[in-house]
Image 1 (tube, helix red, strand yellow):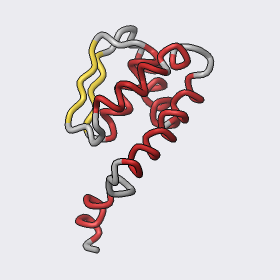
Image 2 (tube, helix red, strand yellow):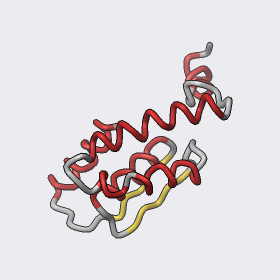
Image 3 (cartoon, helix red, strand yellow):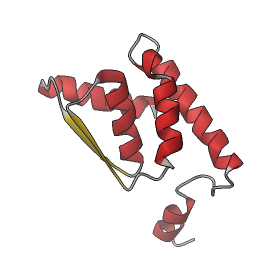
Image 4 (cartoon, one colour):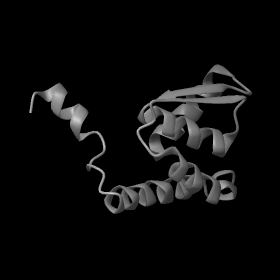
Length: 107
């Protein structure tokens, strides 16, 4: 997720947006939320986020100061690790996108 958040930031800077509205679908919704927490946004729209948003929001809020500091990527990595632990603790299928991938590949 670190590189994806960095990519979103690079695109926003490249096109010169100062206060973007960030929209993401599925995994992109998580990326949009983390990006907004780290860099700010006029608005965030999360569509079909594959995570339990309450748990995800709590992880992001707990790391809000780090996300807005020089430790942004360390905070994102910490959120990633915590989400993996939540997936196992809640007996969610792992990886979370296995079902979608199986349909695409025909397996």
